Length: 187
Image (cartoon, rainbow, N blue to C red; front, side, top):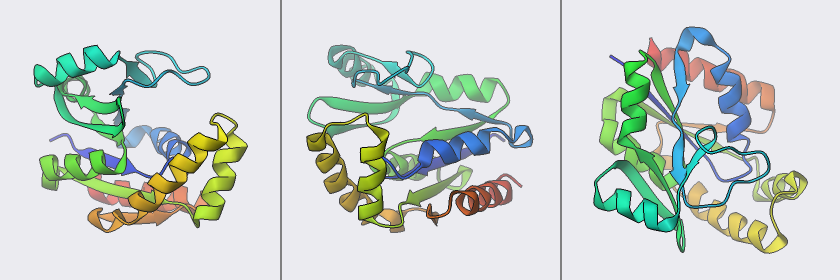
């Protein structure tokens, strides 16, 4: 039976770095679930690689077709979601699904897949450190960073809805904790 690893975190917590390290372990048979979004690509992001980039109209059409396992309007007009076809594709490949989703999406996926999934929350050591990381990224305006920090406070308050909480203070320790929890769950 294929299993599902759900990883959520406030933006800038190091979630992508941790997921990438986990994906290096071929024994885990993990395949990344590519989310759909209405946001614009950042930097070198490519459609079908980091995300499926959809127009708001196309996203709403897929909602009406019941094409999503879960979706969320994270900000006004900015949607993120998981297409049912994506999970089917990964399971057909004989792999376990790894999700990189926002906090509400993570909670919803865990409810949907229950014992077949583990939900892991990655939290920053502090909001000050999170703000520093977001600024150092250089991808967002000051206004966008402030919006992300406000959202992070909300998201951190929901961490107790997850099976596991890992604080990404020292990257190598967080990587090891994530790998161990994932191996235990996959058996």
